[in-house]
Amino acid sequence: MLILGENKLKVLNLINRFGVIGYRQLFDYFEGQISQGAIYKILSDLHENELIKKGNVGRIFYCYITPNAEAIIDKPMYNFKTVNKTEVIHDLRVNDFILKQYKSAVATDKYKYVDFTTERELTDEQLIEREDSFKSNNLTRNVEKIKRNIPDGMLNLETQDGRLLRIAIEYEFTQKSTRRYKEILGRYQKQYDRNEIATVTYIYKGSRVRHKIEQVMSENNYNFNITFRNADNIFD
Image 1 (cartoon, one colour):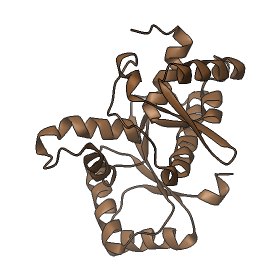
Image 2 (tube, rainbow, N blue to C red; image 1 turned 90 degrees about the vertical axis):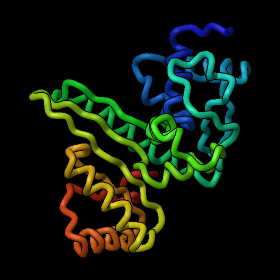
Image 3 (tube, rainbow, N blue to C red; image 1 turned 135 degrees about the vertical axis):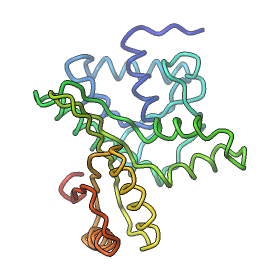
């Protein structure tokens, strides 16, 4: 089995957590720990050993985990052999937001514990928990089914006085139907009532999306904490 040095394993494990991650996001996460030059070299070595694959959308460069990494990474998860390029920009933008919120929370003294859970990690948890309930053995179909009912990521915080705060993150690029929003928001209301989440952060593209969500919230008397962030003010 291939043995990786400490920094290579750190980089590979982070790539695995997200599944797909941008070069710039790796630079930002490891700032002060691993130099950009060293990360470039690590990515080159990981690619040469077929543990990751590389891609780009215009000038945005990214990499993603391969099944070959399963025997090396700390926490193996479900495999995928390729990525859907139509979803890459969405995924990378969610990564950006999660990592910026994570770094911001770490930089304050408000929390004694800060971490995040990626969509890939949430999906893998559900694959394990619901393994016996799936009617199909088609992994891709089961993964997509799960993704319809989980957030794009979670920020996990513990305050200095011991309160646990889980913030669900949703990036809404296009408007969904009223019925679909009722399903999603109703699920968050139940999680809020059970103290499983503290807040939902909706990153929205276009005011019509926000207004639709607010309308469904009002019509169904949902009262969980929700914050809205305009995608145009967040992403380049």
